[in-house]
Image (cartoon, rainbow, N blue to C red; front, side, top):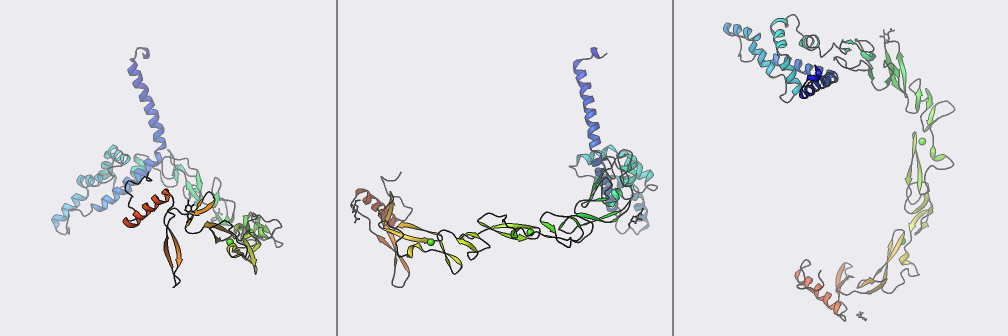
Length: 393
Ligand SMILES: *[C@@H]1O[C@H](CO)[C@@H](O)[C@H](O)[C@H]1NC(C)=O
Ligand SMILES: *[C@@H]1O[C@H](CO)[C@@H](O)[C@H](O)[C@H]1NC(C)=O
Ligand SMILES: [Ca+2]
Ligand SMILES: [Ca+2]
């Protein structure tokens, strides 16, 4: 009686049922992989059979060796040698399957081999029933959709094909669709078709759907293509339209079936192509010189561009900057004399440049300290630190 059951026992029987349920669904899910494992085992068996064919025997040409060889050929020793090498030691599935069915291998080896030489068929399909013949699937090895001769009519893969698992439905190859893989997907047309055979080919790149291979066979054009007056699909020139599809600082580049927008040159405000000679107008800081937008050199204008004392003008593309002249540094927006040693680039007579030290303004104690520190570094190298330097953090 259940009520008299020990609670531990009920728990135990409960978990056994759960375990069995789990194993049942697990087994169903694993039917495909069980067949693959079995397939590998029989392949390795055949390899082992070949490998052991001449093992341990030299030429095999003496009568004694002949006798001995024919004895070994069908011996249990040879079977054991083959069985030993069927699985990788790490493959749990494989080792379990071989262990579980060792007797079956013996039966086949000693009694069935001659009549049923195909081990895969005898063992995987008929004996332990994890595989099915090609073109069939599932527990009862039913024919795949499209028939076992040409599953999916040669245009797809049958789910569970050759195993006791799967549902026999087709996953069609590219270009095919439908339950039977006889229909063509969009962008493809049927070259040949009857109830059992179908060949689909790709449409011209301009067609969305078509009845043949050229751009005149399109039913509908792809996006970016339109029908001309001969009913052929031709490229739409998006850039020739009244309103450009690109931004103001871009130009439009047409391509087959598409277009792209490219950034204008920095010298332009609006453009019709790449480069500073394709500008609609010149950007600020540039001026038109014979059709090309060219940088304005603000520093060589008659009006000085930098107005503060001790400032120098440096020209850049599209603008200019004002920096303090050498020997001066910026402080609160003004150029003041540098407190330490500075170096100015001086032109030598040969035209090359040379750095020449400029002495500091020594009238303030702060400047003096900085001067000493720089002098120390000058004498002891740039990485040396000034001893007991009150300015060092
Ligand atoms: C279908 O077409 C294929 C290929 O052209 C041909 O081999 C086959 O006999 C045809 N079958 C039928 C039923 O017409
Ligand atoms: C040195 O600095 C002092 C105070 O900062 C300043 O008054 C003086 O004009 C400067 N001397 C020179 C030569 O620039
Ligand atoms: Ca286009
Ligand atoms: Ca400039």
